[in-house]
Image 1 (tube, helix red, strand yellow):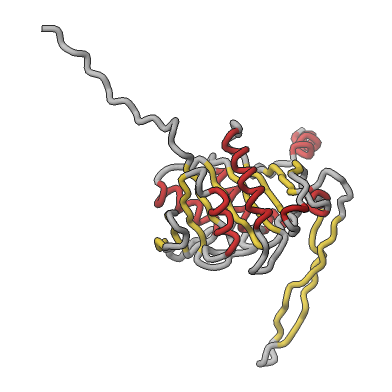
Image 2 (cartoon, rainbow, N blue to C red):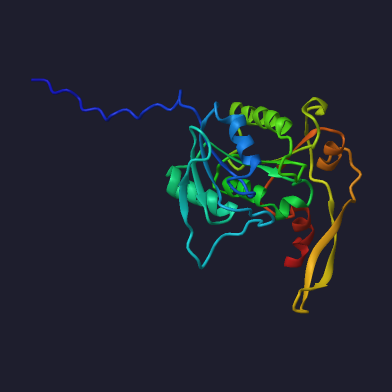
Length: 269
């Protein structure tokens, strides 16, 4: 009797499945900006939200060490699995991959941030650090920011362009470490001219610490400063935003200065 060949079970095809999209931020899970981002893309992927339980602005790429991290499942967005995390934006990405999704998502989106993350702000931004962390883990990502710090900011333009950019990311074969820094002018949607692919401007805050006394007579300091653009190029994110374009800057976590590395080669002799 001829025996039938034993075949291994076929792996379930994911060709027709919606992409898994992780969404996080640094303003906290209750911020209007993250709700706007969820609404912008909720129908084009399986959305999972893991975001801080409170504001984490300016946290940069900090991670939590020496104290416990907690995850709480919450009902924040209709039809979307959502988790609140006691940690930083980077903690949220790490926990999402390891403990919530148990896999790498197809895309990670961070934002929409309340306030600018152009130029030097990318260094300090918790929004962008979450996106960078995803890229480190080989997850293409983007951070979205609106140049309006107001709690009642109009996110309509940012939602429109977030969706456009996410659709472009999904339809393009991106390098696995791709991370995009997207900033949107605080203008009515009708005044936005479109997308500009830019470089990061050399612009920064000229800082000052105001010295004050608390009710007990002890000194404390309050950071203030003025934003100054030292870069007059018309290919920068600052120029694009000032001219009502949505700026998109591809960034990277490799901080090697390659030109300087070549110049310093003679030190090895």
